[in-house]
Amino acid sequence: MITTSILFGFGDITAQSLFKHQIITTKTDEKTGEKYEEVEISDYNFARTCRAVIYGMLFFAPISVMWHGKTLPKLKNPFINILERTRMEQHEHSQRKLHFYDSVFRMGIDQLIFPALVWIPLYNTVMVILAQHDDPFGVIKSKLENNWFNVLKASWTVWPAFQLFNLYFVPVHLRIVTANFWATGWNCFLSFVHNTAGHGKGSGHKIEELVDIEDDDQEITMVYD
Image 1 (tube, one colour):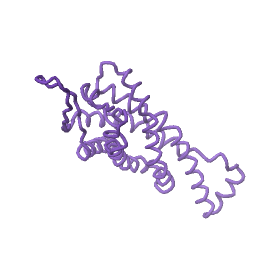
Image 2 (image 1 turned 180 degrees about the vertical axis):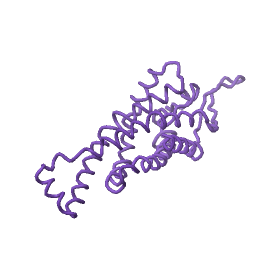
Image 3 (image 1 turned 90 degrees about the horizontal axis):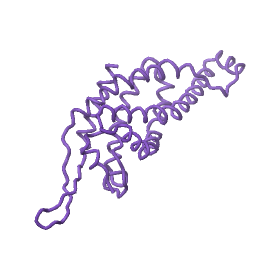
Image 4 (image 1 turned 90 degrees about the vertical axis):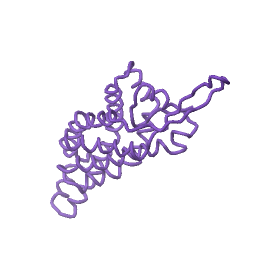
């Protein structure tokens, strides 16, 4: 829990430092009555880092231990029958093949279930509640409707290959720590994609904040048409 919280906090600090947000507000000139846009670069948000630390420590770490450390290693590829599995376990070369087949199956189960049904909904729910929005469940519903599939697609471009490597080569007791280091880069990756033309800000598409929950004012001005 301590390691995860530190890495989540570090990931958020890195993302805020490398990819600063442009807060765009529409104002009206008092003399001419004409509307204009004012662009402001957001400052470092300490509360956002605290929310990332809390999420990593109290939610991501315990669930990850139970899933990646306790449950996933026990799953076996069901497409290999008992007789074939017994035969493969008797030879060193076949053992490596069996381990690979099991790792592929575990990676598939992990990537099909957890990002879509656990991590993305949980992250949005926890971070919105910690941000103390007036209508948290409305904000959660809006974020999941707008961003759930976008984040899931981004996740599938980054995590499956890493998880296969993690499950095949890394010992069970080190897998969560390894995943946490990779997640630091994942957090920055999402911020990078979100700030790249054609993928969010400046793309001409309406999109809400993918990665971070800001305060109420920023929650409104982070929406682009």
